[in-house]
Image: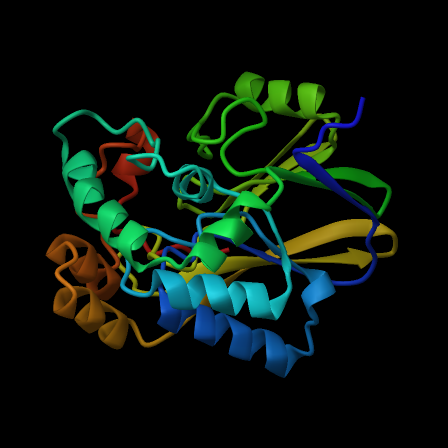
Length: 276
């Protein structure tokens, strides 16, 4: 039986660009589109891992830009929740914690900004993409194959990742949600997280991250890439619209307000500038 949540793209060839977590950051999305245009990337080569909307000031503009761009995209937990008219983002934050408190500000703001057309687009997104690439079975997901809001990090035990490969029938997974870029290879399988473009990677730099993939002599190769954008303007718009000041500061400092969702390994690396 065909799983309607999965969109099969068939076989893809040539270079690919993967990104996620736009988080309503209009300035970052504009910068990524400009880089893609300058590099000659076309929409059929570009993949978004979801969470178009979240913390920043321009949810409607980001949705409409992504729709118009026509790239391959899946639904993150935020698209699912907003599309269904739910009351929160379903990230299972600690009740009363910093993330929970802030989500009670940005989520209703996003709900109030989005048009019915934007919500309709969200409801039409698949939860997974599947394709063949360089002889690999590739699965694009948001959190995990089993739970859209599951946080999987570089430090997450491989056995947990392995269940996703097994149950998702994949050799290579491109994931989102956790907000931090990383790559891990084991037993002939590869887990790739491009990072997000809507918030920095908690490394003390305002840069954000995406991923490029290509085929070299029939083998899949990949490289995380940093993206610079007008974070000052993005933060100013957040403050103008009454969104959390702490998140606006994160755009400037590159440091997350808190590490509530992070395992100890990732928490210990806060402020260490990323290099791939």
